[in-house]
Image (cartoon, rainbow, N blue to C red; front, top):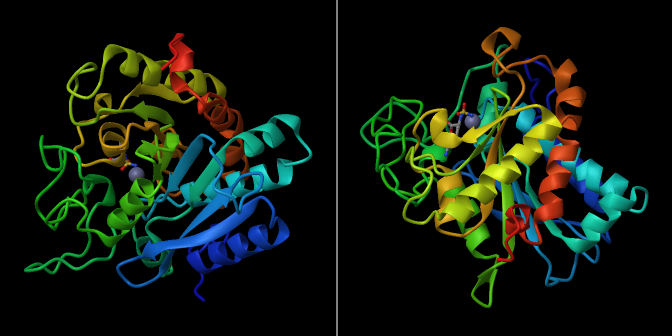
Length: 324
Ligand code: 0X9
Ligand code: ZN
């Protein structure tokens, strides 16, 4: 295939090989499925990890999404880390074994493969964020996937209507095939009218933050977010942040965004969910492009935080002492 500017980072073809290997070596607890195609026609792949993986059990489901933004390559490494953590830990580590048996874990390790490949395809990084979908009437390419989700899309000045912008929201919600495919995948997890996914993390870089919805408003309590629901997000966010040292805050405290996955997962699908902004904390430590030598440290750093979310996936409201 092609050589990345830092070969320590995993290319999309390499990722697909790693997935094949993980599934082949762990057929009872790991499976893969193609849930859609990217704009350029590449397979979008989901990995399911659970005891008795071939049966759709009535268990709380947890979703991990990675790499909406092309240049945030460390998030793909995070997905690989999680696949290996759950499969290698199964039958070895009692806590992981219990969580894999008691949850259905979905990892979408790269929801924007066209963008990732484009970013990696030269001698130097191309600083690419969006997907690779052309825009009508413009020579600028790409939609910002994390501004294209179908809740309050384009409502509040938290995205751009200009295709030249890196936060271009697309001509309509779910116009990006990658967003449509992930949204369809999530809607497909509704069984008998109930969304099976209870909790989710969308991985990004950088700034070392744990963010929770809403992003479209500074308000904590508003239409579609009660005090108890807000406090649950905050309490879980803070509990996870205690484990990885990130800073926990409402996502709009960073800046206002509309059409983000966080707001949609919560408001449309009732999934308690977070954005992790991974390493580094600042531009001076590499920004979007830290050297691959940090991968092991900065992915394993999130082990305990992720396990804490899985612990609470049976009933996230437990963390504030509520039953439902
Ligand atoms: O702007 C974004 O999409 C995220 N930051 S990044 O630097 N990775 O691009 C932040 C998204 C936070 N989520 C919401 N504000 N809802
Ligand atoms: Zn991002």
